[in-house]
Length: 429
Image (cartoon, rainbow, N blue to C red; front, side, top):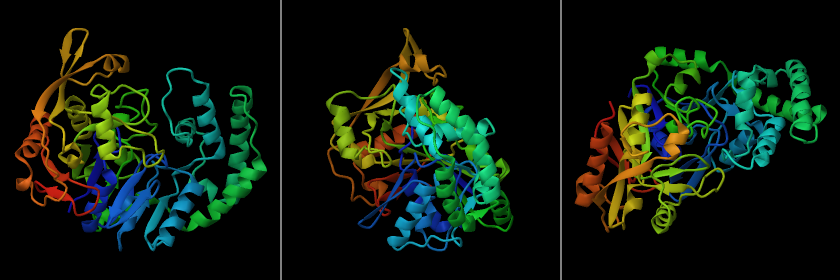
């Protein structure tokens, strides 16, 4: 199997984790390339549900190497609790099957404090952050005042770096945000202990991955969030703070684009969004509640209810183009059982004009009205279907309609949360 990037093709929460889990059986390495613990991948194995925030989904497979790249930001306390939880559940997590880039930046207590304080001051224009410090740590990274894992595991370097950065961050907390200053001694003591534990996992991930690929190993690059939340190409400013698109796989791991063979996009059979921001195909009222309840649409990290809507072919085409998506995996088709008719957004109407391209202006996108093509639904429970040909004709037609509207071949369709409930429609290569 070739080197693959798995990217969310909507606003996140598409079910990337289970697709990565499925593909990782036939690959050697799974590398997470961006985001932080604001992401959550839920994987169902038999009767067991596992939620991962930092760790790549491949960690649940035996004899696979999991890698956290330099594009990821790490909350050491959260990561270590996640490792402990998996070990308690019987999974192997050690320096033999987990490597962390020494260039990855570390989420510090002042990042979380700043995140929460700034969001609470806003009366309008809230982004809907998770309050975990993700935005502020990426800001510090860009401003060249970040602390990397390489700094954290070196006590002398960490002490000097923290002293410099904390003075500036405390000034911002107290004089701008009206918060109490944070203690150097308390942070240093806590985070030095984290550094001692994480040191064994630290390595040059770029060198590791490039050598592995040269040796014939196959790598799956796993993103968090979704393409429409990418800081450059998403619905800015209602986006995450990192490169959630497929291009982030290269900057977030130090692997050249020439080493990537396939970009697999993952999308739900409908659409969801967490937090604020434009969402043209959002459904208000009973149908939206029905989708949310049927799909269990609550954030695996925050527990927040997701906004639900019909499949947006305009947004998906945009994501496919900007990410170079060559194949699609459609998840949660089973959730649509019971709808008499199903809408597909095929265009937008803005100020009396029909748009078939995705607007870059967020204000314009927020003012767009969806243009729907309605297709017949189906009443049958499809969760136990094992062959695509055995799906109700309306369900098969719906999937083919998505292919037609997006211009991307569908690789797989999921009918439930477990590993077994996936139908394959084409080859991945």
